[in-house]
Image: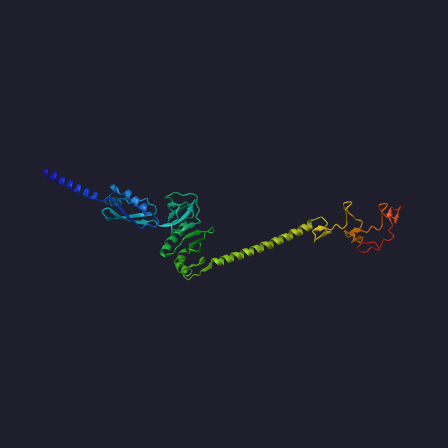
Amino acid sequence: MKKLLIVFLIILVILGGCVIYISTYKLKAINVTGCEYSSPDQVREAVRDYAYMNNTILLYWRNKMKPIKGIPFVAKLDIEFAKKGEVNVTVYEKKISGCIEYMERFIYFDKDGIILEASGDRKEGVPYIDGLVFESWEMGKKLPIKDEEKFNYILTVTQLKEKYQIDVDGITFTPENEIVLHCGKIDIESGDGKNLAIQLMNLKSILSKLEGKAGVLYMKDYSSNDGVVSFKTREMLEAEAKKKEAEKNKKDKKDDKSSEGKDSESSEESDESDDSGYDEGSDDYDDSDYDEGSDDYDDSDYDEESDDYDDSGYDEESDDYDDSGYDEESDDYDDSDYDEESDDYDDSDYDDSYESGESYE
């Protein structure tokens, strides 16, 4: 019994000594490395909160048994002792495939489309994805996008851009479901994405020859190592756009003139009014036969056959008709040739032979 008591006391002493020794490992400093997208301050705060009794030894064993989780962009943390009150934390981040903009916030997601973070800040090195359509999102959940194939293309770009060290700033999915990569001031048209791996494998060497330039690189038909590509500078594209605009304007003007001509012909055919007295120069009708007193045209010289007025009696100087036969006292014309019985004028001078124009001798 005495021996058991001695053994128990020894154990208590050892345990007490261990507790005292462990208590000297107070967590004072946390060194964080490996953060590219994640925040070092967030990592330090998470580690400190996870440290039981603020002890480095207890922190180490606890993380081994149940790793720290819930830090944005962090997949795993490795914790090692630096010294008694100091630990080194190595951060292994999740691979961010891209980000999209939604209601003035940047939403970051991984290769599976799982949303990692929503922030007002744009992180450098993360491709900006344009052309993904969705209506809502939830943190930690997958983006509700129907076209799963687009995520495969994003993953291909994300993996190969790191492998071949290509700076891809963004990816655009066009309405025609084609892919456009953005590398600095150069846009790469990659087509439907079927040859994306081969294109990215050779893209770095092609871009090295275009350093300092801005424009569009056409790789739609690039499907092998010896494929052919073409490049157009911004200046060439602007010149082509101006030329097309000028041709379009020219065609529109031609169409407008053609339309106006058709409208004019239609108007002339349907217009029932007689424009024989129309003066093209003055844009007014010729009213030389107009009688101001009666407010009607004088049709005494009217030729029924030709539908035109005969102005043979017109006096150009006075701008009035010749009224030599006019009787001022009676205010009527001289009717000396008038035959009372027939109630018609004497037509002895009338030429029965009638020639074209139908005039009197």
